[in-house]
Image (cartoon, rainbow, N blue to C red):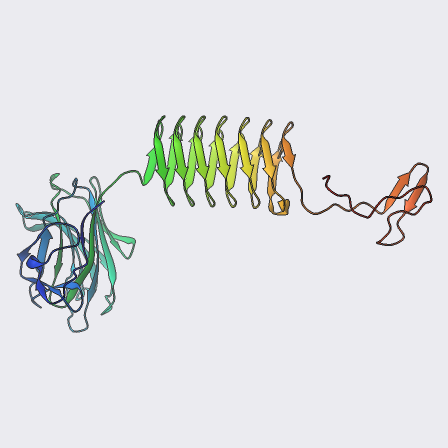
Length: 387
């Protein structure tokens, strides 16, 4: 959740300390001076030789949060030094900053403790004038926990050596540096669910897991028994041992989802799964859809199973018209096992040209007639699906 958002919008040039952000508290300039440019809707420093720097009073929920902004340099200055801050604590001051250094052609991240640089990380970069660059700092604890991103790719990192004070988010720039579209967001777990032992989503929990989420479970279930999971397109569910969606779980798995399971079932016994077109279900050992499960499988499916059945005994599978696009493959065992009720209809099958009726062999003379005999007539050349 964003605790600070600022598009730096003003109708005329305004001192940053007098500017109100879209979301958040007040701005305090602690070094030099800064202005919000009315004609650009960007913030800049007021001096070409001294950096302006400021922090916002909005408080993050903890010392782990993200700060992101768009920065740029203009054509008339070789030293913009524009960038962003996390964990700014005026008592030290202590903070982490990441900024553009054009004379050195570097992206620079520094940890400052009691006003002195305690750690630095750099990445070589030539900065093109009047070009937007997206800066992001992820403030996390632990070894190399503070990471810096340039246009979505991690380039620098440091290990925070200070205390657990959350501090504030901030910005910096000289006269010809620019900062825009600042967003500071509390770090929230749950985007990636990892579990070595136990369940990623515990029994009885309700989970809405959005596109692009990865759920990993080495032991146990990714979505445990009794949980209700809505898993959107693009989600990957991996389970080394156990079930990706456990017994009793209700899962709506949409187009593009991949369910992988090394041991056990991708959808376990007793689970109800509606799996849309385009989904791939892979099972190395066991069944992709286990015994007792009711699965509606539409056109465009690939069901693969190295050992065992792609659709197990007792399963009812409706495979729709147009099943020429459905692939059911199994190296060992049955693709559709004994006792399964399956309707597969596609093109009308042609009868062979030769028929034996009683003691006579009837040979079709052309494509229009299958058999000619005074006492026999077999319709057209096509065997139709019963009405």
